[in-house]
Amino acid sequence: MTDQGYLRIATEEAFAPPELITRWRSMLADGSSGDPGFDSLWGFYMGDSPRARQIVERLEDLGERRIADMDATGIDRQIIALTSPGTQIFDAAEGTAIAAAANDVLADACRRHPDRFTGLTAIAPQDPERAAEEIERGVNRLGFRGVIINSHTRGEYLDDKKFWPVLEAAEALDTPIYLHPNTPSPRMIEPMLEAGLDGAVFGFAVETGLHLLRMITSGVFDRFPRLRVVVGHLGEALPFWSYRIDFMHTASLRSGRFPHLSALELAPGEYLRRNIWVTTSGMAWEPAILFTRQVLGDDRVLYAMDYPYQSAPTEVSVHDRLPIDAAALRALYQTNAEKVFGLPPSS
Ligand code: 1DF
Ligand code: MN
Image (cartoon, rainbow, N blue to C red; front, side):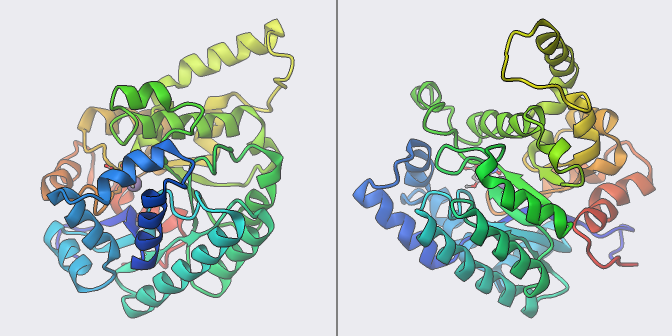
């Protein structure tokens, strides 16, 4: 236990094996990604700006540099996942192989630093059956505590029945899916690219919030009622929209405007409070954190930093100084994460 009375567990932290960075570089060079969002985002991070260099260097490190950064910002444990878009721009065979290799690298680092690192399982949803097997390997053999999926997979969303084996495996193994941002899908990105809004500034949240909302309104959580999903950035705006979504969703069903929409067992906002946990990644902002805790409940909001994309002691202080009592602060930083990811509780 550190002196502030709680452990700081950061829950949306990223890494990338050098082999993946090299492969992404070759895709950018030959223009074969088929994804304008990937080209925009990773075109920047593969460049030679100071930010790009220091991000890539830190993504690749799963040892002393990462731990030194954690010590410098007061982070006790990172929950680490393959950075976005991970395997999700490759064909099924290559994506599946890269996921397995990345998982082996991460599992090895977690074994070397069991008191500092916890891993999430990377998968390639492009091959849903193999992805389900990798989830099982992650949980049962590699010691991972959840699954990372970076929003759309080559323009497709998890409510598509083809991906149900993935959701079924996560539910059956009782392991959460971290639905992390990706750049908007090719069908959605064009007006954002024009305006330079396709990345973390806005496009990520539009894409990922839409993805989660599609899962809710298509009935994924009626089919998989015990499926648990974690989303970053305080819920990718959905908590703020929740009242209006519930109101308008009910009205659209009543009017029969969309014949392919079917009734749900609950209102959309009730799934937010039953199946979804959110993290504070990139949102070190008191009013937004307090609002989200009020809407979803104190037990559903978890701390995240988003290392190495965001790594500032001042943002940790914002969380430390929230006007909530000591038990609530400990829940935000430590015990909610221990429960959601099934970590062995610390004292
Ligand atoms: C950025 C932000 C990149 C986040 C990320 O992964 C990421 C960024 C490529 O600022 O470019 O995960 N984020 O979650 O906010
Ligand atoms: Mn992130």
